[in-house]
Image (cartoon, rainbow, N blue to C red; front, side, top):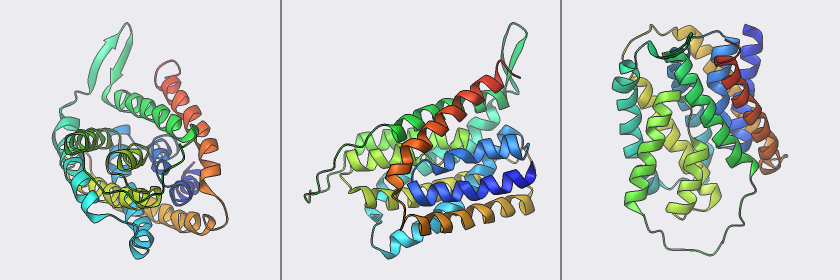
Length: 264
């Protein structure tokens, strides 16, 4: 299973390199089901893996001038604060046994996996639905600060809880709320994801000891994958692959709900 896990880690990077937002949604299931990492620790590991791969992925966007630094700061600051506080205080505060339904005990790990599965289903919808044609006319960028603050905070809390980058939420928000062109939204999103994921990882309350050799190994495979994905993106249109990947994520989300409840 470990070999399958490392192969899957490469595919996480390939998905990120090919389709941008949504690729990191596979990280936690790979860690939990292929590497048998505890769900709570897996969400922490995922923050580091997602953050490191996003740093690598954002470099090419920086070099092409496709990162809007002002937007990254305005959206990123509330998101970074939210993810740090979530990892430092909210996640450690969740009891090991959350509630009981009959004989079924919903543990902390099960709760996080169920939240993650619901997030996967939402993510799959954003990938499957057809994107509206974008108006390419230059527009003056006007920040809707209250909405950006709320969106950034919500994305930060979700990232802190489940360890996903949240690119599928950030990219539409940047396009709609900050009026960014799609390519610039993807580049800016990667910078925000990198910052909030890595800082969120630093907010860990130290509940579990980190296996750094394992963590660096999985991260290295994911980074190899993102280079492959970026190379393939020059020959394959990621937009055409996105709906198919979305259906796969939907099936995975439903599987996780069934596995953590009926099949546990």
